Length: 122
Image (cartoon, rainbow, N blue to C red; front, side):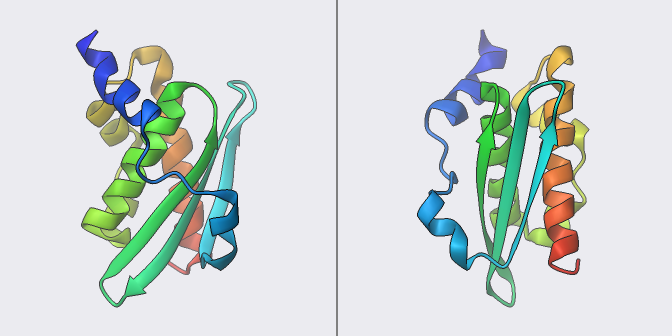
């Protein structure tokens, strides 16, 4: 049960979930999907100033997808975009104590952020 706590806490109250009305002004965004798992994640990133970013997400899928997207957006805001782009799916798995059958979730959100970073020219 303790392994579920990070996922469930973020799933029930994601701090960085975007509202549909918010997405118009973001500079970088990309949607990544996993057809087999019927899940998708859209990561939105906006530069606040020379050294900081805001990050938000829209996602569909199991609780782990929402939790992972929220965690990843938090990392962008705390560490910066360059440092967050260096994160791996294994980092997501470890941070959220994802089960072995949820490993694809880390890859999904990392791929979405990587594509957003490429869209921003990173």
